[in-house]
Image 1 (cartoon, rainbow, N blue to C red):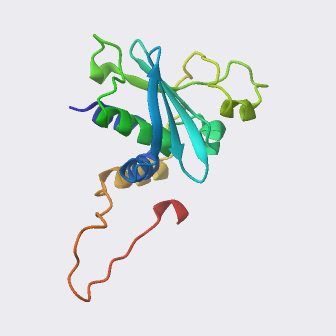
Image 2 (cartoon, rainbow, N blue to C red):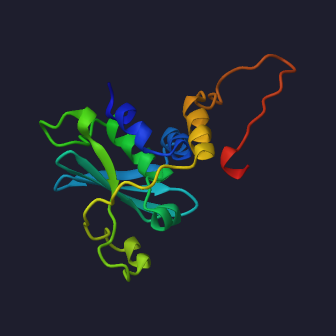
Length: 174
């Protein structure tokens, strides 16, 4: 089983769907590793910087996008980098760590007064993993479950019958 399949339940379904689209469109740029930390740039509305750091059974993650800064939750850019690293056979876990024991956790600044604008210049400071958040409301769990079971978007290269209409729904905008 691929690590992305194991990590998928730990990432919001909307982030997974949009991250897959970013990965598929080659939006992940300059993926590299230094001292075990995976660094990448993802082209979105701007260039966002993503860091993935395996520490024991944890995969600590950070991104400079507003979604991550506001929520400290895995965003589409992080998911795109996970998929890109996996596709390039870049190790996302330390040797000897069982993939099914890996937990994805955000890098959260230790200091509440940290200026988040600094994240564009250098990675956020390493912090202890956050405690588990309260469970999402029932309606959110239902939507996430439905989103997680939906099929990936059709390939633009797929042929359609003459006169067939193709409806594209932007879940994020609705």
